[in-house]
Length: 247
Image 1 (cartoon, rainbow, N blue to C red):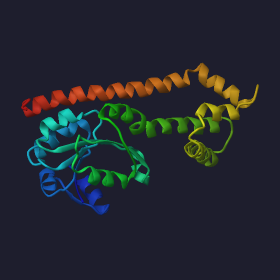
Image 2 (cartoon, rainbow, N blue to C red):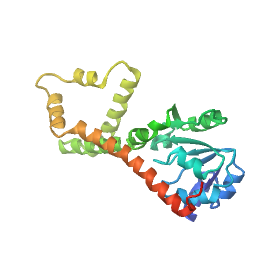
Image 3 (tube, rainbow, N blue to C red):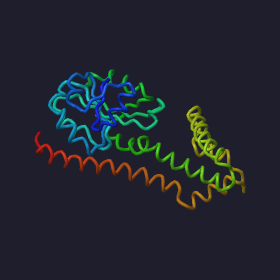
Image 4 (cartoon, one colour):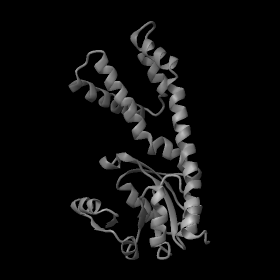
């Protein structure tokens, strides 16, 4: 496995992780059987200039947010282009990865096996990738925000810090596990099982609803999805400028 990076510091980290590393994108791709493009979308024009002419016939998997296959195919001449969207939980082997495969994909098995090493893979149409990016790609950050708020709340009512963070994290994990193991149980049903009339839980739910908790989450995911579409337009413009808009 060969990884590329621009900075010397990053190259050192990659080598310490046991990877062969180089600053030459072209060198890495020329001998590769499978290519992953895992850069910030705004760096893609640089990568495209380096490898656009040497990927014909190769499976190329983009994990860039917001960059559609139609745009990738325009500059990665002759490549079999896939889109994937993993998330940060790849660090613990628990990524939730969306995979879009082109029609009649010849390398689908290879691509799926590679992504399955990092967690669960879901085959989805490309039209769902932006929404997936907002929900599952950005999701760890949203969950972390809620967990952080729960920790602060625990501190506010007197729980010691040594307990608060662990309890909050285990609470999210155990609740999610219960819902996964009981797929017929709607989250609203679980909530209602906890609520008692005039009790502590309904007091907490009332406060969340009065502050627009659910609406805020819905708006956040919607805005993230729309942002993915904006990124696509911005990258298309950058590619036109840097590559001369050639087809």
